[in-house]
Image 1 (cartoon, rainbow, N blue to C red):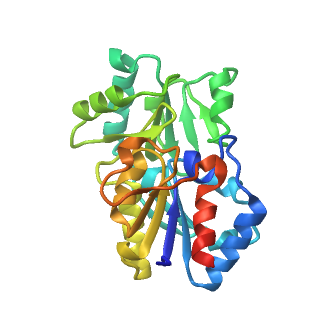
Image 2 (cartoon, rainbow, N blue to C red):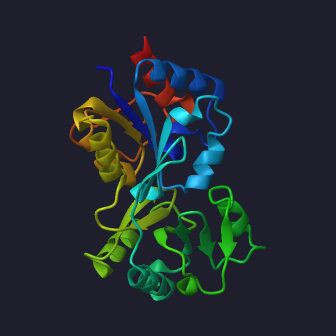
Length: 271
């Protein structure tokens, strides 16, 4: 069945391992989807400025809607802000302080993500700072994260390892009913409000557009995509996805992100 809304995660799902996609192919698909009145939604833990830069080469980029910061912010391709949900100042500052001192969180890197700028204590001369700029073009170095006064939508916590389930579980025990940590893949954990998620933001969009979840399709590869994939009528995990998200109605695609799994499925709907 052809969906009325298509949503996709980016890293590990829509983008290849180098963070690229086939611009010409996707631009043509966006145009074709628009003619069929099918909406396309980018759902990601990445910040708004990064995804806007990523899709800037597209002629039909205004047909996109962006759910960014793991659901904390939704913006249309025309730049209209549809919703934003910031963390309570006390809660995110307490979380940063705990992340710095809890033994299980040792050697983590923390980025506090605002609406228009991201903040970190990493030195601007460090390799990690420059690597992070690929995802956070407006990354700003500060001496003390807890002194940032801007509204913070999400904390991005990463390690130089791939398996962080114990860290995610420990964080959620510590901040139960205040904040929630979710695996973002690639050795990362995103911290948001308990009711903020890609799934919740996509559901809210559906209510605005008059589209029910069973009329939606979604693609993902990691823990922060799981609820979204289970919520929609057609949930797809790319072949390289974490096996833990392939539950219930979620289907595993034969193709990986490297093979253009999302675009292949879109082509099937456009036939």
